[in-house]
Image 1 (cartoon, rainbow, N blue to C red):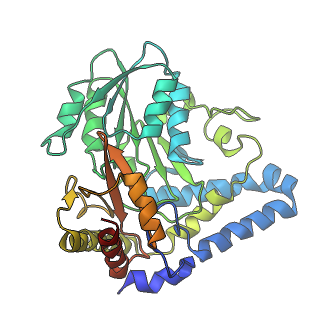
Image 2 (image 1 turned 90 degrees about the vertical axis):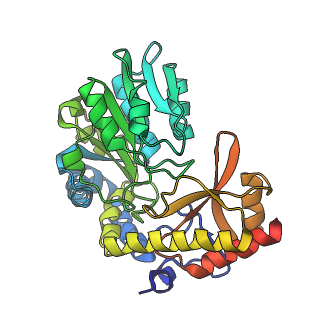
Length: 364
């Protein structure tokens, strides 16, 4: 079955644009947006009744559904607008600040690094080479008794690398150090049993690879740490999870509609499609353009692949030139060099990557 051809019309995507920039365009099908609109109509019809009497039960049911999808107990999960907010919540709740030693890698997401620098902690940045045979061991070598927190990406944004976060979490626990997993790209793209893995802190976006409305993400926290968690904005309620259900008056309909997105697909099939088309797309670009420099070979494991294209404009400039040629693709930077990230979403098919290869040839 060609998922790209059969599902793409649901998104109402522009037929003149090849969308390989998953997470920014076309990530939510109309059926899910209709479900969000239904919840929004309930909210607007009687806001007081919604917030005071009905929203808590709705959020409880939505959490249960998402928790089943992630294979974690519903009591350990709360909604947050995005993974960045979830990370900020962890740092805020632990009161990370000056004098606290925090270990990260040189693949850590830029917004997370900014949050840590803003809090004035002592950052220990561990370089991880793409050919490192044991990156978990390399990272754990930097963890000492003085380390307050370790931050590890499940899937790196800059390099498209599925890091061995499970081993890092276990190693940190053996050393008595807390570990925070930035899994922004994980929900929908990988299938992991979070209940069994039991990370201290884990945040993941639902609005990327799980095709939920924008502004839907989750934070999962180990049981003995939950009562330490406080949202950065304190409102009428305290404690887990109520403090996160009502952080003042917000529009929670992205959270409530997320379960509808999780019911759209056979997820094994959706993941297999993404991995297949992104690998085929990378090979197509290599054959058409030559000198494709893939980063760590994780494209066969996931639905995204970051590639370097030598002798072409800087990544951001190239991205804009490709946009004018009818291709939307993400760009990233690592160690001062630009890369393109190509993605394999359920709505992508081979024609998208043909257009990418042709557009790259035209601007090179």
